[in-house]
Amino acid sequence: MSETTTDCLFCRILAGDIPADIIYESDTAIAFRDINPQAPTHVLIIPRKHVATINDIDPGDEEIVGSLYSAARDIAAAEGIAEEGYRAVMNCNEGAGQSVFHIHLHLLGGRTLSWPPG
Ligand code: 5GP
Ligand code: ZN
Image (cartoon, rainbow, N blue to C red):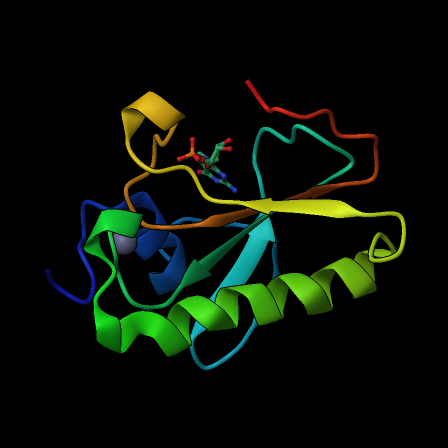
């Protein structure tokens, strides 16, 4: 698996080739607002490293993947939704709704979220 791929939408956002509303950046991750938000707060948190799906996470990626949750914690606080609650979820493969094959944590909040998601 290459570190970046020119045909990956999110790698192109990382490279600055495609504009996005980037609200968070760290050494390992960035976050930007979803183009088709499903809640008042809908942010996508992605690793700088290209990893296609959860199935492709290597043992050495654990710190990177963990950093996505640290980002979610900080962004939820900044968005003012930490106390009321939010969801941080990652879809894996088409059957679960994954459409962009560069892993991303959806951070959703600002409204009541039902369960199960369907
Ligand atoms: P998935 O379906 O893979 O779990 O989530 C992909 C998400 O990426 C979707 O919520 C979709 O709205 C979002 N998305 C797709 N293309 C773009 C884009 O060009 N810019 C941004 N900001 N979000 C995008
Ligand atoms: Zn990518």
